[in-house]
Image (cartoon, rainbow, N blue to C red):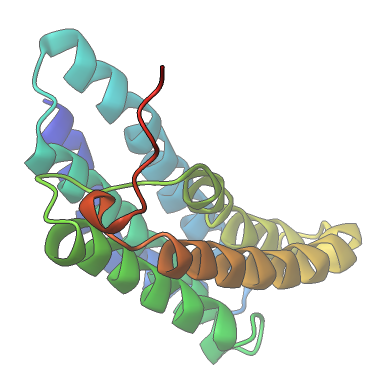
Length: 181
């Protein structure tokens, strides 16, 4: 059931990108509906997987990949309209690639190796699209907050990527501590 909810979010990637690429109010209404369904599936899939005992490395990767594709589809579409700077979805793409490569190839984990800042960023990456939708629906007072948020996300994504690079050494390569007496 949890993977089915995640699959719904994956299916919503293209419609979301389509409605985010259009700047009109009608498209914003459809984008809002798609965003709400996607976020609802994201909130439900984890608890359902934990409750039913179906949490696996695959389901975690599937969930993160679906989130990533959904978020960047909206951000790239918004960048196409000039709403977001291109650097934001480009950095998120680079950060996700780094996250994937670092987890599976550098550290050879069986699942994705997260960080606290990466988790917060992952949650906040959903926000610029909804703020853009709400602005298109008439809440223009959100414009300065959207600009601030976008640039803070750019900065925090760079910091997160830097942290991952700094701490990418394998545990056996880290200096050992002297034995405690």
